Figure 1 (cartoon, rainbow, N blue to C red):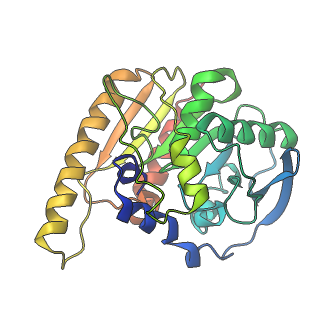
Figure 2 (figure 1 turned 120 degrees about the horizontal axis):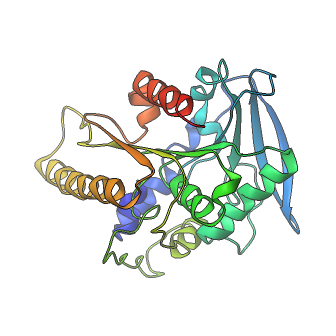
Length: 274
């Protein structure tokens, strides 16, 4: 999980980088196109469709650190009854280009803006899972007029909002085998403290645990829950435009483990936007 990446935990970096790749296959109907965002850089963009009416809100889905837009199958299909829905695989993920540079949080967010411009998507609501929250905060802090709102799916952690006094731990050295793209993205994390955009921040805390876990894993989970609870409090205090929701016994993929809750919260949030 991306929060553990920031804590410098090499084992979880590797888990994040390799977990779920086999689950990113196409499982729902959608169209795919490639949008050029820079010289020799094209991003994979999924279009799940949705109502054609001009007054329908557009959602743009951004996946976690090691995932691509296909990770939102089939969640996206639950959204298209009400919204126009796109997904973007960031550079280095899925079928998108994997150049040697451009992986800072602002750089990745600029790619999202370039896709929005190419598709002529005006003031969408950005939905980011996990590390996707970094791109949300980058855009929301630098270009608040370009989005209507931000929805963080267990993605409002330190990479998305840096609480007072926060200092990220460095990644392990080159002797630890971290995929180059993951290392570049984490190295390029920036700190955001001012997000003047309506936001919904859903935290999966305290986290759901499997039935048979070791005492050591249980202790580690409790420690991470404590960090997450403090971060939820910091986000709530530091981002006055945000509604912060804590979902107990949810998983990091909160839109899967608590799908109905998340759909309801999204609907309430969107309905409240001007």
